[in-house]
Length: 223
Image (cartoon, rainbow, N blue to C red):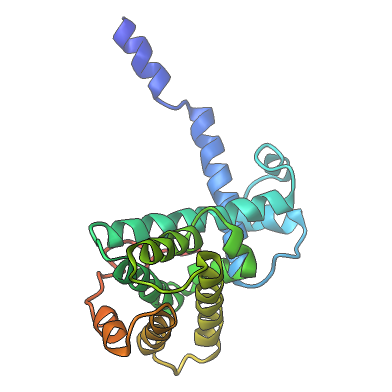
């Protein structure tokens, strides 16, 4: 009997599952609107897109801004988790940094809706505790501590890296004829040289084979 009671507690009830589906539908709707550049819409339009009742909105979010923040946070969490998985086991901070940068550069073309959600936050990504920024800063600081990088200020180096990845994403959306892999790798090489690597070292790091974004479940993700 005790085991049965514990199992019942561990299994979400129908009401909890319905609430979870409603919240997920609202977040997906917000992500779709962000990807389309339509964040300035009434809550009614969001609920209609999510196919949920107007009253359901306030059961989950106190404002439209809170919903959009949650929508971006979910994408940042996904992005960060994928980067962690794909760079696991790399012991060279320069390689870890470059791999994350090169993968994110490819994300802009391979997962365009997800990319547009990220870009909708603009430079706010710099201060986010999730996603690429904190991981890039960690890798930059590790490079400084190990002597791999010669820059003296990890925060300013992060500004360069974050500004580059945001600008690259917008550039690739605006210029579909450009090769995303070539562009991402070129900027990664230039950043590594700015951080203190030689041209030969930067080339070697950025020639390292990348894991497949498709296998990580990112390229096929829809916002």
